[in-house]
Image: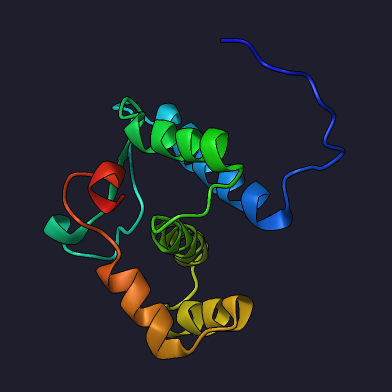
Length: 135
């Protein structure tokens, strides 16, 4: 593969960095688990939980391919990544002892969304089969 070297003088924007940061963080936490799996929404019933399998790199490759071709991670998949970030933050708040309603209120304020939108995202984000099934 031959590549012309040009300095664009640009860096990835804040949204692109956020997406990359979420993916790295989620996969890193999954790798740290004894079984290599991370559950993003423990509050949900087992059949509705979203599991991140650290051995499943297809979502990472899909997004990296999109970035290589188009210079952006943005695609139809990005709202789902936002949901992952919201669920991850929700789990963090709940594990620190915050009540469900307080965690939802805080996430709504942090993400400039309505309480009902946050509730839908933390209760309906997961699909069986892990991150690949979401993308």
